[in-house]
Image (tube, rainbow, N blue to C red):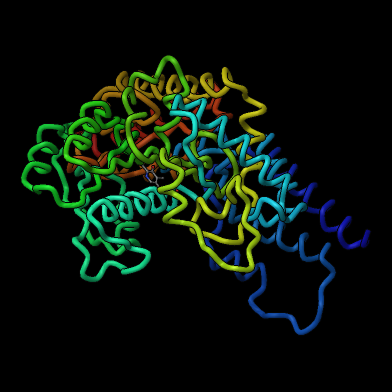
Length: 463
Ligand SMILES: *Cc1c(COP(=O)(O)O)cnc(C)c1O
């Protein structure tokens, strides 16, 4: 083996361990902005070669001040998971193996991991056996893929073949979404040539209003229709009423997709499965492995009940590809060549086991509950959502005070929480998505939060 390989990987190994060891004590936010890191990395393209070992060294040291401790147990921003050790190590191997995971005959090991991970995910979620799972880059592409299968299926039922004829001149597809669906759904509808969705009213937790959905469906006659539901609202953590909404949508012949980027795995916990009860009646589902399952970026999962519908939308029939009767991984995703994403999913599931996945969900939601109770105990603070899952949205008085508290949390650096707006109010949002978060991480974050609120009040005692 070439010396460069050993040197470069040993350098990367040492820096990776150093980074992970720093997580417990370092400030969560970065110390430098992108332009500063770029200066340190050097903007000039060198004329000649550099030893790979030196490149790794430069990369690691120049980047360090610009890294955010996202894998830390005190990162509660956006909805971002950490990295489970089994998945992280599997990800290193994935790069070393460099398998192009599209074809069964070309990459038997990669395909085996995906086959097994597919069956395990379907089993853990309690979905019907035989559902197909595609390994994509994230929730957005999982939504894209599931909604593509839906678009093509409802148009095929209306006698229109999208693959052959495109969308111009087609009967069109109506897409209905709840008012508080994730913006990525609108984005992928643009990719799919479907334009903006029609929105249906949601309740005070952001759950789609089933009576309003029924009215909208009735008004639409029997046009080809897709309904996209949500399992896990980023602000409230709430789940659309799955059973009722799916029943109404199916009664009108619609394809039902579920965006469960971080909520779908509630189904794997006996204690939280009630939140999503009835979701198995849908036609397609999207989830992220890089959120709740805590695999490294990037990995999302699209699940489609009818494997033929998925294959019809995603397969490519190039003559030079040796097709396999068992089906090839590339037939379930938009990409042709791609990373072997099954390895990390297989590894985290193999390591956690069925009970470990359930316990992970229960721990995340349990920490969210602790946050909610801690925040509610702060004078003048309000938890604005029903904390049913992993998300907590809080206000600390008027909007200016809440915005100030968010800024002080970030400046303090103990933890990362997100400032957002929800239902016309400034909020501080806590998303518990990291496998490694401990009771102590929650306690340290609450101490920082109480101090931030006290400091914000000191500036203006009227708050
Ligand atoms: C994160 C998220 C997405 C988008 O997923 P990406 O992995 O960022 O592409 C979609 N829907 C919901 C509800 C999400 O939380």
